[in-house]
Every structure is written in C-alpha cells, then in structure tokens.
Image 1 (tube, helix red, strand yellow):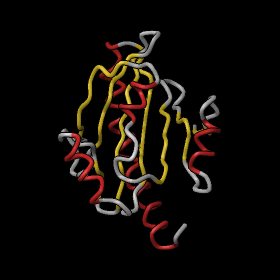
Image 2 (cartoon, rainbow, N blue to C red):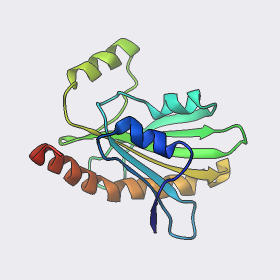
Image 3 (cartoon, rainbow, N blue to C red):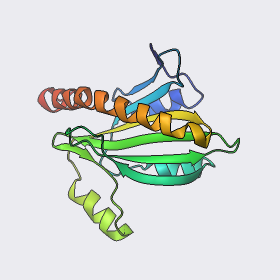
Image 4 (cartoon, one colour):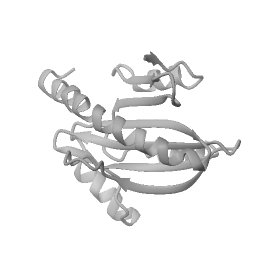
Length: 169
C-alpha cells in the first residue's frame, strides 16, 4: 500500500522543489516497517542524505556503497544512523542518470566537488529510500528489504527520467 508522506517536513520539501513534481511516498506491506521513497530532480551530489542526517541530530554509524546481488549494475550509498531516541534508521540513496546510478565516492572533498562539477547540467534524479530498523539487531533484515526495494524501483526511475529528457517535463 502506498500513501503520500504527510510528515511536518513534507509540504516544505514539496515547495522547495516546486514547480517540479516529486515522489514522496510511504510504502507498506502491513507487516514490516514502511519504506519512505523520495525522488526529486537534483544535480548529482547536490545534497547528501548522510550530511542531512548529521544536521538533524542523528549519528551516522555506518556508511557504505552497496550493490544488489543481481547483475543490474545498480549501486547506491547506504547510511545507518541512530537518532536521539536510539532509533536505528537505514537509508539507501543515489543519483539516477540515464547511464545508471551515481554514488558518492570516498574521494577527497576537492575531487568530490570536481566530479560533481563535471556532471553539472546532466539530467538526474536523487532517489532515497529509508526505513526504521528499530534496533541494531533488526538492521540486517531492513537492509535486505531496502536492497530489494531499490532493485524494483530503479527501472521505474529510469523510465521517469527518460520521459523527462524526451518531453522536457
């Protein structure tokens, strides 16, 4: 089941990206923690969810680049963070270009900025999928769910991006 996210930051986030449409939804199978999906047109590397987590008071306890076990070529950044209430959250994110997924690479800050400048103007969407893992012990199951969710979502994101490139909207 999918529903639009209506948290306190949802409306300001939608206004921030206007007039562009964004996807900001929560998906639930009724058993596991819901997955929040955020897709917005954004330059590669323009905003980092790991930095956002830090600014919002969470502690990033793990950051890695993940690839699903299939041969899709999808690669995304995964951050595991702990909030003020010791809640463990897992987020997978990447920037989707027509050529594939782009992740933050463990480069020096100047190299990272140069890599982003070289992609300036390239059409891309930032894709972010987050879910609460509850405790560190539940994080492994949540990680598997997010990896599968990302694998299913990416072909749809690519189609959306292709439509934007083809039609200009």
